[in-house]
Image (tube, rainbow, N blue to C red):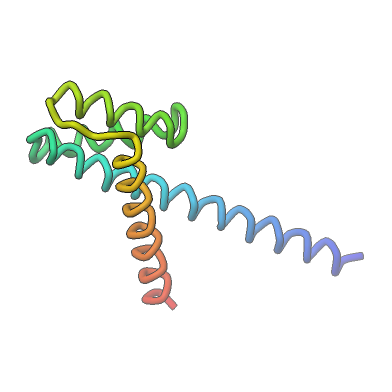
Length: 110
């Protein structure tokens, strides 16, 4: 019976680690996307950093759709045309970059 309990605990720990990593990747992706959008809007320095945080916060409020909606609205208000498809492509590209960064960091820590 102990063996099954140990397996269950190991599976739970693995699941928890995977969920934490997914959250970190998404947050980094959104921060990068926010930094990109800030540059498109002409923001720099602390203003760009603050803006990127608002993009991260948008994810917490409604997922990818909320992020894309926020970016579309903000970019349109700033006179920067961008379609949902363009923004989704950027989101996916930054997701891959964030994932690669975490994988490289994990290899370096091993």
